[in-house]
Amino acid sequence: PWIHEVDGRMVAEAGADALWLDTCVEQVEKDGVVISGFDVAAGQSVAFVLSWCPSHAAAPDVPDPEAALAETLAFWQEWTQKCTYDGPYREPVVRSLIALKAMTYGPSGGIVAAPSTSLPEEIGGNRNWDYRFTWLRDASTTLAALLGTGYRQEAQAWRRWLLRAVAGDPENLQIMYGLTGERDLRERELPWLPGYEGSAPVRVGNGAADQLQLDVYGEVIETLYLAHQSGVAHCADSAVLHQRLIKHLAQRWHEPDEGIWEIRGARRHFVHSKVMAWVAVDRTIRLAEAGALDMALGPLIELRETIHREVCAEGFDPVRNTFTQSYGSQELDAATLLIPRVGFLPPDDPRVIGTVDAVRRELSTADGLVHRYPTTGEDAGVDGLAGDEGTFVLCSFWLVDALALTGRLDEAHALFEHLLALRSDLGLLAEEFDPVHQRQLGNFPQAFSHMGLIQSARLLHLLSTRSSRHQGSVALPVPRSAPDRRRQTRTGLASQHA
Image 1 (cartoon, rainbow, N blue to C red):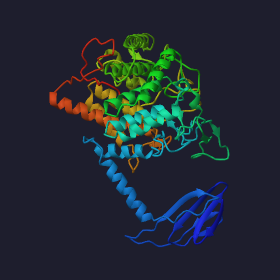
Image 2 (cartoon, rainbow, N blue to C red; image 1 turned 90 degrees about the vertical axis):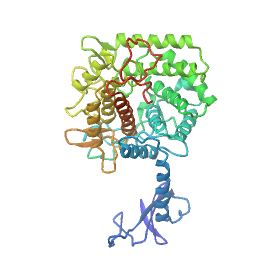
Image 3 (cartoon, rainbow, N blue to C red; image 1 turned 180 degrees about the horizontal axis):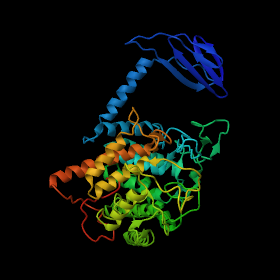
Image 4 (cartoon, rainbow, N blue to C red; image 1 turned 135 degrees about the vertical axis):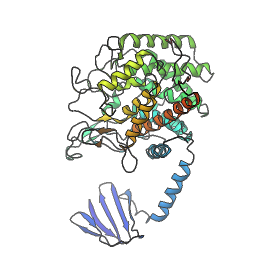
């Protein structure tokens, strides 16, 4: 940029953009950088304020940093007071809520998956992605965490964003959009940038926008269902969108897809995708039964049972007593830990317990950190990518939930507290964690990780409270609409995020 002084202010201009740097101490440009030298004593402060504006526009007003700081503090103090969660681990829960709110773009209601791009999942590797977009999945699960802690305004704003982004064309639903609903997110590489610690390429845009990910229908419809349960006012337009989404899913649920992990290899029949398709139909049935959605129940109930039968027949390995990553696969997937959380099967079903044990055995480290799926071995290459990655923070929180639901509360609490210790000094979590070098990996901070923290804290509080009341096994409600129920579960939940 062209760096120069204008009326005592330093400005850097390049193309369409200009940055103005204001401070009370002297600034000097030297060799393309701005330098200030000064002394500061205890109790004193020096403010530096960076402002952006179009390079062709007039200079922005000189900011008042003290007033801006006071206004910012007042906003967050007022916002956090609305949190309705008062159980254990409140401090990390509130910190995570702040992170999720800060990743929400106020003018549109869109929520980014992370505010960064190309922070690597393996130092020196090429698994570097741009997360500065609104994934329907990530935004839905983020809003579930917000709804569960008393924040309904954000759900209303996101619902308006969803209607604008999808518009009248749910048949061409994208799994992700720009913050204001942009559809063109083409991926490209920036070869002139070296990447974080030499981790190249640096990418802008994300090619996953063009993928088929059937689980997205489940997450979106689950959030619409939770919004209704939380008292968010009925919206006729979102009801029409819901009807169109479920009709489209009914036509496509049996297809292979790229799944929750956005593989860049061949499409597969991922078990998690089918389970979330079941969730979409199940929550639709509940809304219809409650009179909140005008849809015929008969075909929906039949579809729900059809999906359930197929998943249990094609996605389960009876020899190893575990659900697998995809139909016919021998590999595991941490996403199957959600099967009891969403109510697909009760937590005390032997198939659920076997799946939890298999994930711990084959995908977990000794201290309980969980990998998404194998990147080496017989089925290596499922994601179509070279290299390796760290453990996935959200998957580790899923294991916390699965342990708690299957009656192993002490182990769940121990793992949860271990995960809390992985946070940065500001209480923030990245997408992944390297258990060998003990460092965070991937884009940062990650909405998925903080959503997982909030949901696990809420579940542990709920189950611990009910366990202490009953002094033993806990009888919680399970989804009455789910088929294949052979007995009353000890620790079921009505929905993934309830």
